[in-house]
Image (cartoon, rainbow, N blue to C red; front, side, top):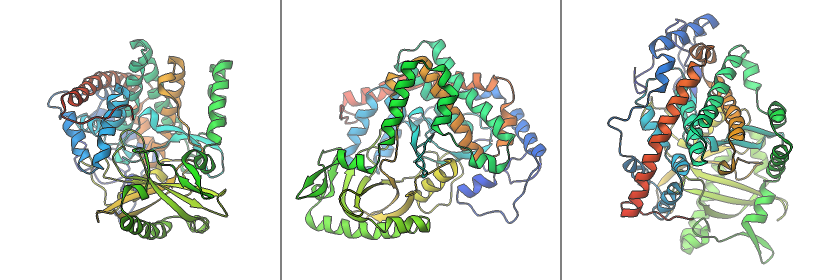
Length: 495
């Protein structure tokens, strides 16, 4: 059965897997009766999936009749801010890894042609290595997890594993690592995933739900593998992340004008709304924004609504973020609490349809922001207290979906270009573990663990896939570079 085919109904029979949680995440109607297959039936379903799709088949990468990668990127540009699209192309041209970061649609198109286990989870949809990192939990402890969910959508679990694995292979190539070292890194990620999934399969539902990766625990896990210099560097990064909050954003993103904080003007990357539109449009934007924030509050827990209501909106600005997201509408909202020294920065980011939506069974969400938020809550062990969604009209009168969250909340990520092979291997392992935790929360962890088995066949198949995908990524990156050089696309580099 292809990934786009309809999955079977949930039954306690061995040949069917439990899709109840993933179905809820997709916004579908709950079945009239929720089935609860036994542990043995779930394991049998995983083993049956392995008969249909042997582990070795996960190495397959289909190159025949591939879609034109540039056409796929151009199809995304249609709904984006026209003047920002060249920045996206320029950032993707910077390196094969940068290209890979922005090529989630291209990879989704490739993945749809590969054999599918049909073991559904809530997918991140863009689980490359830079979309994992540290951030502050509501309890103000640093945790490690997936931190980007723009493309989240239910689908076969291996798609996320392959996206992560291939990103490590691409990054390893960019960093000049040998074939042998790249493979070792990818194997570490896949092994971390498989072994963690087996561990989660042996745990109860509540134990899995409460599981999280506290950074203190992560450091104790890999601490004996780090020398003094790397330990010091890691601790410095954690200390820096602790101070990445609204106060730090206030210092970096604003200046004082007549005794009040005003967002800096740094076009095209950071532009206050007052510089984007005429006075009447700006007035309308703030009126609409007031309505948006009022409606957005309704998507939060009651206590968090109460907290948000203690802040008043000060200013709005457009901010360019990331690589793949460039061109989608992203705003930062500066709020003030007791006084100017009590700020809150929120980010409102446009949510378009997931790149996976054309290749798996569609969800029934009417708001793409709600899809992102619910997917994030389902996959993350701990999420931003201000995570919510809303639909709002733009100055062009078109209504668009958004999700909102804090702009900075202890967030930190690795600098891929500075990683050495051993360090990337450690990182790959904890990324694989985090991905398994996210999938165990939403899918049938017992069936997946049974499918993966106790041997290293899955890891080796994923490593083969990753290397082939990385090779294809080099060709696709070169295609975009040629498109920029010939004028097929306009690319602005160095921004």
